[in-house]
Image (cartoon, rainbow, N blue to C red; front, side, top):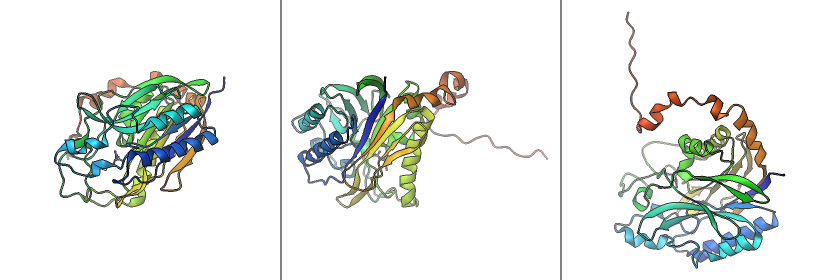
Length: 320
Ligand code: CDT
């Protein structure tokens, strides 16, 4: 049985604060049409794909920000995406802000089967930024204000895709920088990691200099090493371009289990990049250098779970 599937990153250009979901959804449906023309089986949209990256805007009263969240999925606004997935027989990964019936808020991603059924849901664990207005920052990054830490762990599920089955998992944006998150997916034999991101071109922390080109480099480095060290494919899809004066760096990529970039976006706008992926290519790493059962040494990894922040090491001083 062929285990070849065609994966796509559907990068989105900027979505302005004043633009409604209909604008974003219309653009996303056009990318789905393009995906269909190119024989794509799975399309991965970015983090918080339906709106501008609203955590850059401070609201004293969080309820004032409620209009950025989805309270149901699908909804009237997102129904065209589900219809397009069904019409074209394409699986779809979608990132959005979720508000639950009991009022909890999460930065969420779902994977939707072409039938419209939600196969897998993930809620972002590594929320960057801060909770209160930070006067030192040039631009706010208030994910800790607008979202709770995800409560679903890092789930992986085996699901039918294009006549085969694939083990799929998800990360969201900042999660990609944390090897622990990738490893929890790898320990469940993940074959395809889908992840969306919104990353500013500039470090707005204002606490030191970081060269622009290294921002992209660090993103790619994280995804490439995550894929290599866990023997999986990765589809990392950006929002790019300038949202209300704030630049996001784009550079979406699809990566193979060797850590090689198979496809990369070259614009900062709406752009579909694709790659044909043989899921059996995940077997080499998993059965050799990253054969976890043979080579992992959990007895030496205690600190990973026992400790959160780093501690200073003991100091060596010469006896003589
Ligand atoms: N959305 C997201 O997680 N962005 C972060 C940048 C945070 S800067 C405070 C990222 O890791 O790309």
